[in-house]
Length: 311
Image 1 (spheres, rainbow, N blue to C red):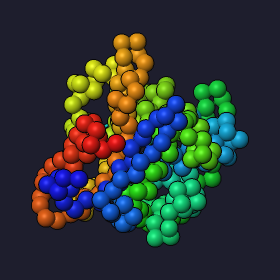
Image 2 (cartoon, rainbow, N blue to C red; image 1 turned 45 degrees about the vertical axis):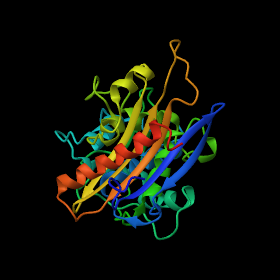
Image 3 (spheres, helix red, strand yellow; image 1 turned 90 degrees about the vertical axis):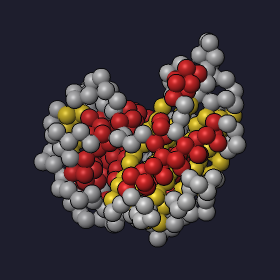
Image 4 (tube, rainbow, N blue to C red; image 1 turned 120 degrees about the vertical axis):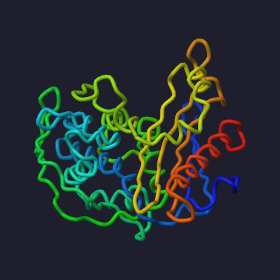
């Protein structure tokens, strides 16, 4: 990796290549992938996924992230978490609310029992704001419902590595293709709601939702978007989540950048797919300078992926 761009970040990259429809992975880092830190708000997508899995298992798989609470689609709440459109509820408060649904002990167990990370990592901490005054009875469009007894515990602190953030997101994205790593209980409809927002949105019927609505655009800014748009016929996707605190930047993202022929069929070995997780510590430069450094790191990685130097 070019030293001008990657000065001090902790970094994990997972490259995805599909062979006969089966995903294969290559893991890359600058040697820091297992180092742990406070990941700030970058973990909120994990809390939402845990909530979805708990809803499914508590309802015999009839209720999930596709449900509503008090007439509000959970997918719209997931969009607020990622977009920080805080006209009604705060992102931090809603992330705590999703922890209340999913359970903090269960959230922490996913890091160890599902991802297989060591005891030095932990997950389940809150985000600095009270949960909103929303109920805990969830209703699907077809009428199925479940009531959850909320978990009001403080939970473990959030202390993770870039590897864990990247692997967690990779497994969610590959839910359909890689059955061996599926989050237990989660259904694809839940993952799609996390990524895109509510299918029947009340608040965002014509806007990007879920993880597509992340406020940070590091992957998009590092890509030749016009060329990507043209060769993918508009089918490229980016799902991501920013974390920021004490001058530190944390960002995790998935990018799918297909190349399609005139008939819409994939052009083999041209499209790219990857997950990037980066943590850039405070100090050494201004906040604007660290933001620019993180953007430059993304650009350096994506340039090398697109031109084939990383494959």
